[in-house]
Length: 266
Image (cartoon, rainbow, N blue to C red; front, side):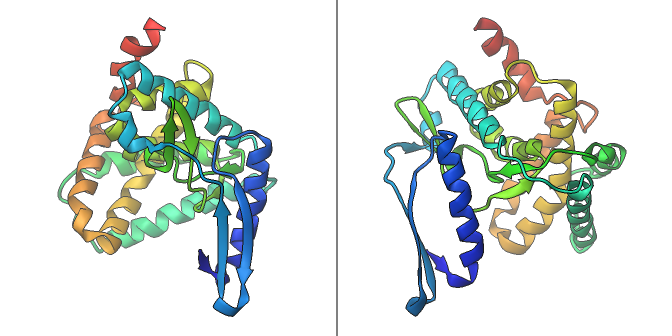
């Protein structure tokens, strides 16, 4: 349920949910979408789906089962990204860079003494040209285990409410922020399943760029909106900078360390 002021966006969401249904994306089916004029509300009615939240259930699975769940998730995400949207070739570059610069400006209001931001900001500046001429697709925009369910080892995607449009690799920023904390084998599987095998160095360059670009936004947003979670934010950003050896490495340590043990034994 939401305010009717969101009607147009929710109507568009309904349209895209129907497209996802045609692609056989495992997600709760959106059965009805109605506007209650007298209450100034919109209501979405979803089909009931059995399962346990992915964040909770992954810890109870074996390493191989976590990897397999991640691989299915990556394959599903690839299908989600098959929904393309026409746009000017420079639209994504302008949108994403402007958003980054807004957070850089806002970052000046906060003291950052828990990590060295210089290598992060330098990495972004040196790699911003990667934003040019990127494809524009439908994005889940909050794709991680907490927005999934697992039932009988099958992966189900939930919560498309934050959907957006942009570079498909941008949907991997939550791997750096959240997924690797929950399950590194799942994260390895997601990358491997999405890429259909070993990812290219170009994939890792984009992945690293989007991971680095989240730093100003995460610091500002957490301090503004959830100050009680500042310690969690500090932990995850320090983890990311460690994973990328202060952004001197494109391929994160979590992938390198898990890769041989999981993938090479397949």
